[in-house]
Image (tube, rainbow, N blue to C red; front, side):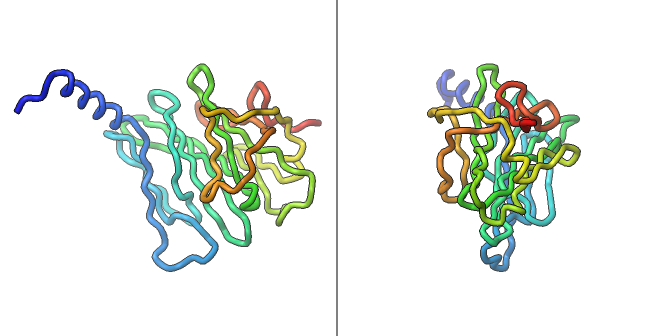
Length: 213
């Protein structure tokens, strides 16, 4: 049976759309890990490119993915080492020479009740990541709080994070507030914006997270 032309063309469009999306699959520990949560292996795929497989300790449990441009993508994820702490991840990957490759990884470690990131779409199609303002009050294991913008980028402890410039926001329906696994973190009213650059993460030029002096 021949399909009507409009249905046939729609199926082609759907196949093409699926082919250029980033998908993530994870392998998890077989044995119970208690209050620790992580993946042992993570495979990132963009058909028809060769997938990227990451192996190691405390790899992120994959969450939503976003396409930034023709060949760049971001995957959000989370992991936990236990003791009431949690890390949120943003992996920036690209497709080049027929293969998926990792460009950079942002990681934010806080206590579980504070773990959350805002993802906001910009008019030009780019994304910004908002880190909720860090409270000046006592925090659980605050010596372990850290923001890392990538392997070749600076890291910031809680004292520096408290000095970040923040912007007042009202979350809209177009914003994503990512606070896995239970979405228990309070919805932020102030965030420090971090931009996604071609090859990594950086303070936003406008409303950015650059520390106050």
